[in-house]
Amino acid sequence: MSLPKRRHSKTRGRLRRTGDALGLPAIMACPECGAAIEPHRACKKCGAFGTKRNVIKVKREKSKSE
Image 1 (cartoon, helix red, strand yellow):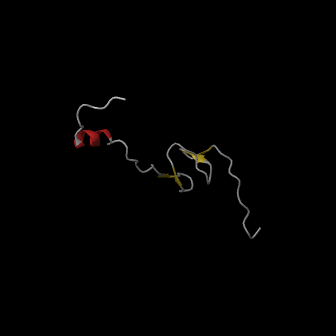
Image 2: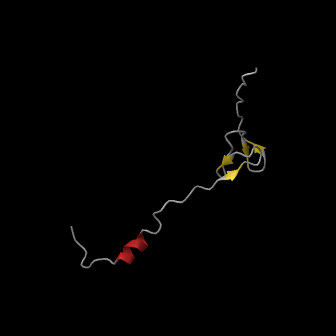
Image 3: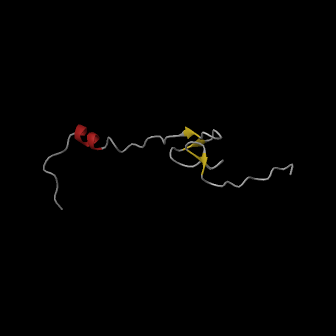
């Protein structure tokens, strides 16, 4: 296996790694119930997507009083 003829500088190695860091995920509020959701995803609580359009039928849990 061949080896490099010269050593790379610290700057050159660091420039190569500039895109390796992970960023925080984008989070927005659901327009229907206000729960935290990712953009372009349906809400897991109420089933709303985007402009208050329900695309998922969510089963409601029975409360203790019923």
